[in-house]
Structures are given as C-alpha cells and as structure tokens.
Length: 446
Image (cartoon, rainbow, N blue to C red; front, side, top):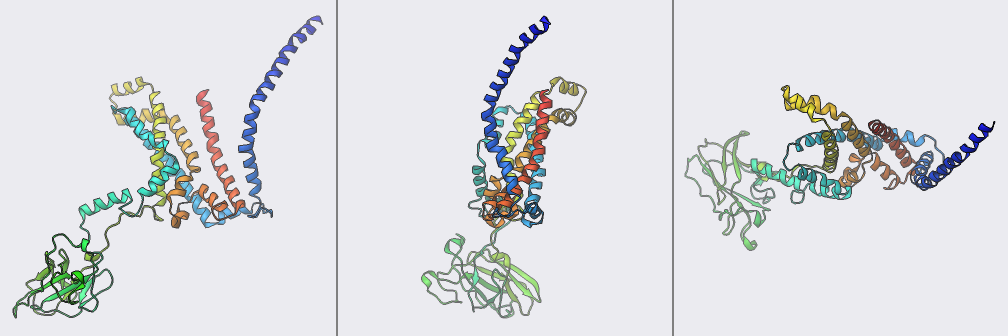
C-alpha cells in the first residue's frame, strides 16, 4: 500500500508537467489556428453555404448552382480548358525540366545556365502576362514573334508589290478591290495599253522607279502588245487622269498577263519606268490582266491570340515561367542518384540513351511524381496569365475555372452563388492532388 501511494505521488508531478506542456503548446499554436480558421476554414465554409443560394443570396436553391455548372456552355468550356492545362502543362514542364537537368550536368557553365532559366520565376505572373501579351501582338511592328515570322516569310517569299494600289475609276480597268484587274476592252497586237493606278503613297514607290512614258504604237501586223503601268497622279495634282503626264512614275515589278479564251497567253513584268511588252502573240483579241498577287495584303504573321491558338499561347507563357522551377527540383534529385550505378552501366557498355531510360528516369520517378503533382496543383489555380494575355473578344475561349469563377462573381456576372459553387468545385479538384503530394513527402521523410 505504501509503495502504491509513493508511486502515485511521484507520478503526479509528471502529469502536471505534461499538462503544463500541453497548455503551453496550445498557447503557442492558438494564434496559428485562429489565423488558419480565419483565412482558410471560414472562407471555405462560407463559400459552400453561399453556393447553396441564388445570385442575390436571399433564396435557397440547394444544388441548383452545381447543376448550372454542367449546363452553362461557357463554364463547360472553362472546364475543358482546365483539363487541357492539367494534361499538357505539367507533362511538358516535367519533360523539359528532366531534359534540361540532365543536359546541364554536361555543360561547363551549368550554374549560369540554371540561373538564366530560373530567372523568370522572379517575374510576377502580372509582369509575365504583360510581356507575352506584347510578344503575341498581331502587328509585327510591335509583336516580336510575328516580327520574326514575317521576317522569315519575306525571306523565302516575295511580298506583294503594291497592296494599296487601285485603278482610277472609269479609265479602262475593271475588277473588285484587291484585284485582279483587267482591261474593259479587248486589245489586239500592235495596240498600246496604258494602265493607270492611284492609291500608292510616295514612300511606297520603289526607289528605282523611273518616269513613266506612254507606250508607242506597234507596226501593223507586229505580234507585240506594249504597255505601261504607272501611278496616274502627277506631283501637285496636275495632269490629265488616264493619260501619262510628265512627272508621273512607273510602277516597276508589277506582273501583267495577256489572257485569251480564259488562258494566260503571255506574262511580263513591268520595268523601272512601268513599261512591259508581250511578244510572239497570235492575231486576235486579248485581255490584259494584272493578277491579284500584285495587290495582296502583306503577310502579318500568326494570330497567336485568336480563338484557335490563345490557350496554347498562354500555356507557352506558363512554360517560360516554370521551366526553371522544374529543372532545379529535378536537378536536385539527379544529384542524389548514386554515381556508381551510372558508372557500372557505362562499364557494361550501355549507351547514354539506355542509361537515361533505364536508370536515370526510374531512379528519378519519385521526384518526377512530386514535380508533376505540384505543377498540377499550380495549373488548376492559374488565373493571372489567362486574364492578362487573352484579349476581351476571345476571353471566353481561354477561360479556365479560376478566371470563370472570378468573371461570374465579380467581373460582370454578379452571381456569387454560382461563383461560390465554382470555387468549391475547384477546391475539390485540388485537394486530392494536395493529399497525394503530402503523403509522398511523408513517405520520403520516413
């Protein structure tokens, strides 16, 4: 009995000490719990309750907002785009990160290379969105990507000579805007042809253009049609429309065709003074035609922010920002791979490709999984890039769940019931990936 009392007396101070430690732990954890409750738990609970009411918040609709999600075409499009993001962006980023991490091990200036690739992580999504919105501009004078595309295109393909030119009305040429333009009356060999155009700015005339001269009439029976293509506008506005006047310039480089029975019988190119000649023509009537290629609008590049390409374009901007992150994490995992396994494979005659596929990738599988799942969580919440890069007319084509939720709630929809339902759906989609990642971290730490 005495031993029991002694044991209880010795245990009481230990119990009191443990209780004091628990109270002290609760005291230290309490601010964090209050903050967590105020910033996480309360908003989640409030959003769920709000999702059960209509847009005004006065009428209980139950699951009505969740039914509206699967019935609204714009919301379904946002869900489709989110699915594209989840599949494409993490896959590409993980693959790029893996390839770059392996390659940087073989680069002399690996640290500098990694620094350059990681620098975009220091740029906010707002700044990155503005950068790529400018880079994707349709106007090649402003958009760097289209400036490159136009430069490459114009290197291999000639541009139209005079995209703004049009014939002077009522002076021998017919045709719709942009060509082709043809002579109203048929022309026979030996008859001169004057083709006057207007609408060409002085700075658009080639530097080598010479003064135009009226074509001479050919000798009777000669198999030649001679003509001139010129700017029918003399300096100061002087001169007679439809007539080659002093001071009027030729339009060199213009392609001209002689057409008979719907077929091109001869083709010529206007010289520096705008003159051209068709020779070897058979007797008969011809139509002189200027093909539409002379007046085609210049190539303006790719419509990156059009409905068809806006989502891939935004994903491209996202890759620019996050590739460095994936590369650094995978590179850290790569550094932990035992080198003796790689060296043993090389000693056995394995190629670098075989080592990469059968040793490096399997050993990096846990790291690759963590990187992939982390990126999945991140792309589910992407908002800034989509909202900033996508122009207003195609915003709906680029929307993801996060942007759709904001637009429905605050961006003009004013339906916070539906917006709250979307936020709950987004939370339910993100939570499984978060739980998976946390379990992976716990298993790796055990």
